[in-house]
Length: 248
Image (cartoon, rainbow, N blue to C red; front, side):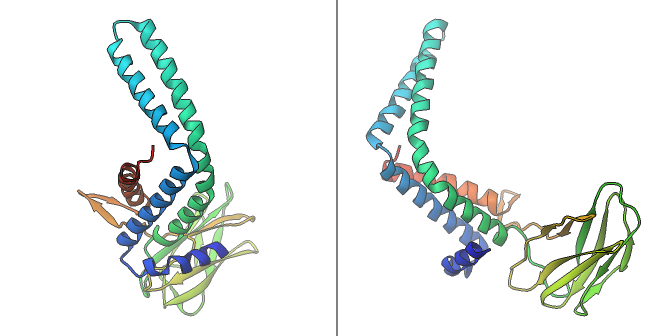
């Protein structure tokens, strides 16, 4: 997509860094954008007052445990203030929604999977319509080697082949009962990859390159991909920025 190419250019300096640092810096950039827009598109005096009032009502609710009627009244007022706070927060959310979604889409297409290296074995799966029987064939260019069999039986409405090949972008072709579908595959040492799945309209419903998910952060033995890493650092940066910039 065109905007993917645009973001590749915009974030080109970040792509020269290790992936972990790239994701950390992107989470910082996005957090700064959101906080700055929030600060200057909302009435921060009002937002602070709403938050302070909500805290006061929450304090009252805890103190009124022996008086359910008064506690319910305080809870109702707290909920009204919370709704008002959310309505005022809606404007920056609307402004940032589309740009953030575009950046997230680009990050998913850039950091989600490990690339397929030259001569590294990988699998590709073709999914068929319900109750499809028979054999399916994969047709590959001369730079690609079929590790198992060219023609394979369809089982449970799918067939998988194991391949390996030389560096470059290649076209794989899948044939079943006169129908043919194609899917591009990128083999490279650069860390890049092509969208793993392609939906089709024939009996062959989906073609999927079985990339390995990329793990970029090891958090006490918990290995995280780009999204989990982004969320953790985004929360840290957002909390810090809100405090430093006094955004409520």
